[in-house]
Length: 154
Image (tube, rainbow, N blue to C red; front, side, top):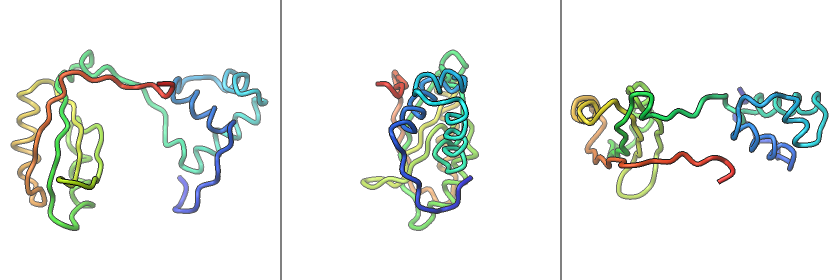
């Protein structure tokens, strides 16, 4: 993975490759090359550079959480002890179902998205796991009634 250096600028071909791979991470080098009008060797080299530079962090599947047995979803806001972000972040990363963690500005410090099998499991996660963390001062849970993951094309 790339160190903390200035990122190389992306050109239109790089951005098109990223858009294609976000839509279909399993796209073949041949189809990527054909779509963005470069040689397979060029497409391969560009994808490897994007990975080496840390622009592409990995490939994965987009999951329907409800079908995967994770039917409850919530955004949880947390107020935390000042300067405890790194410690709290490491604890949140280990939570089952944690999908997104962000340090934010405003009325709270952290925004956490979680998926759980049901509301009982979600309640357990909030009341037992989150609220027992020493650096978590308070939480507020926002239940998600319906969600839609947007594709890179909109």
